[in-house]
Image (cartoon, rainbow over all chains, first blue to last red; front, side, top):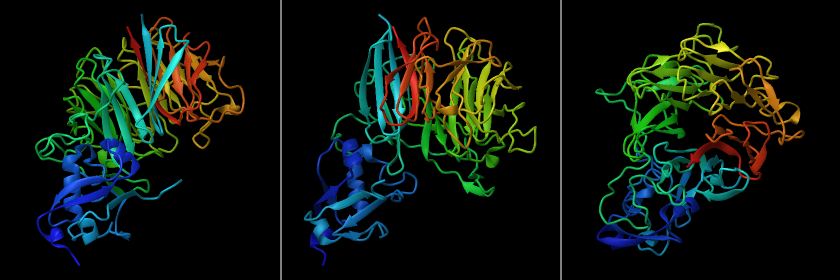
Length: 109
Length: 393
C-alpha cells in the first residue's frame, strides 16, 4: 500500500550511507532528504547527489547511471538492488519511517 | 630553514611525513582518507602547498582530492569544502574520467586485448599516477587503468583524455599486466613542455613530442621472454621509468625483468642489469645531483615478490648501470619478505641527496646520505603504494 506522499507531493526520506560515504559527505547518522514524488531509488539518489555533490559517481556510475557493482540497496529488509530504479519505494521508506540502506557488498575480509 | 615532506599513499589511507632539513626527526600526519586506497599523491613543483591525491575504492570508485595548504586540509576539486553546498544543481562533475570517443577529438577505440587474447571493452577503473605540471599548478596529468592519459587544466576539476595515445595504432593490442592495464609512469621533460614519456603495464613505453596529440612506442631493444618477436613494438611489461631533470634524453627503466637504459629519448634501449643479483623489480630512481647514480630494489622473481634471502637491499650504481653495489646499512638483514612497488621510491634535492622508499610491510625507509645508510621513518603503516618527496625551502 503506497501513501499519497509516495505518489505525489514531496516527502522526507532517510538514507543510511556506508561509513566511507558518510565521511565523504561530512555527515553523521542518516541523511534526511526532501524528495519529490514519485519516491523511487532514482529520485532519492538524485536528491542525495544534489545536496551532497561529493557523492556523485560513488553510488552510480557516471556514464550509465547504474548502481556501482559492489553497492547494494535495501528497503524494509528487502534487497532492492536489482529492482528498477523507477519502482516506487515502500511507503515506510517514502514516508521516512524506515531508511533506504546503501551498503557496500562483500562485508568483511 | 629547509625541510622535507614525504607523501605516502597506502592501501588504507594517506600519510604525510615531515622533517626539517636534517632529516632525523619526523612527524607523521594521517591517516587522511582513512580506509581508502591511495594509489598516488604528488605535490606541484610550482606551488608546494598544492598536493593532488588519487583516492580510490573498489566499492565507491575514483576520487581526486586536493590540498592547497600543504596537506592540512583537503577537498575534491570543483566542490565546496563544506558539508552542505548551496542549493541548486551541482556545478561540478568531480572525479569524472571519460574516455574520449568523440569524432572530433577522440578515437573510436572501444576494446583492448584481454588476458586470454580476446578483445575486451575499455573500462575506467582508477587513477594510478598523478603528475602535476612543472610550470602551472592548475595543470595536472593522470595515468589511469584501463590505460589512458588524462589532463586537467583547472586544478583537477575536469579531465580530458589525450586520446592520441590510445588511438595511435597499437591500442587494441595492449594487454594488462598481472596488476591490470595501468598507465603508471608519466615523465615531463623540463626542457620541452611538449615532450612527455609514459609507460603502461604491459604495453610498454611511449613518447609524445607534441604535447600529447601523437605518440610513438619507444620499446626498441627491450627483450621479454614471453614475446616471441624480438622486435615487438609493444607488449613489454615496463614497471617504472626514471629520469634526471638535467638530462631528459636519458631514461632508466625497471622492466619486469631487466634494468634498461636509453640515451636517445627511448629510440634505443640497452640492458644495464650488470651484476645485480636479480634484475626483477619495480622501483627505480635517480640521484638528485648525480645523473649517473641510480637506485633499484631487486626482488627475487615475478613469482616471489620479496627480496632475495629475506635481506632487504637497495642497489646503487654510480656508473649509469652495469656496476651495482648493495646498500644494506640500516635495512633488515633477515626474515624480510616485503615488496617495494613501482611508485614507492623518491628522492629529495637536499645536499646530500635523500632517498626514500616504502614497503608493502608498511615501513618507510629514508637515507640522508645518498643511500649509504638507512633508517625507518615509520614502521607500521598499511602497505605502501607510493612515496613522493617535496623539498621545501
